[in-house]
Length: 283
Ligand code: PAF
Image (tube, rainbow, N blue to C red; front, side, top):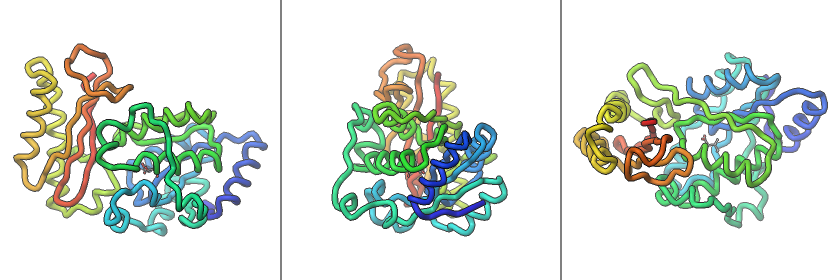
């Protein structure tokens, strides 16, 4: 595996690979790689001739300085893991190489057509602008045929799909199912910040969400939201930030179970100081 940090070098490489007719699969990440990422990379390897993984803790998508500071980073460990799945190229730029002075001093703006008005959007101002800024930059530099994203970040996938359409990137967006530990905890780089005890407690997020699927014939949408929140808030140190049940395409909250056939429940829960997200499909 070759490690590249220069944006112009990766751009030059990808131009040549495309001239040679090679298909490229990109897995954008912020590092602290786990089995969830590896499942995306294995799929990218299977579906493309060349697999590129980017590792970049993108400062513009953090609305909280402490969160950026504590985000887990270990590039050597990531590189070793990537070797085990035969990744072809690791693109790991520095922030100074990615953003010009002008970009650092101006706020990137994107028209989300309402997709940013729910769930993570209002709670993390500027977050999705930063995500679109970096992902559009990676798409321009690498021009992959396919790009792979985990469905744990359900809203992010919807926004990247919209961005790909409106910015006219000729790239197939491939959402990949959430990978869970045997105990149900959704794999996430942030799990590294949990103590062993918190990791155990956090498994309740999945168990409660899963159990909620058996209650849709008895409880209204509003009642089910309250039930999930109450169940989880009763377990220390879990604190639900929001639970929203939305149309899986528009991300708008639904009010009755027969409103659409595409229904997803999206949750953010603090486990102590660690902010965890998860989701479950009702139909
Ligand atoms: O999901 C992530 O890890 C990040 O938001 C992404 C897509 C790599 C952009 O920085």
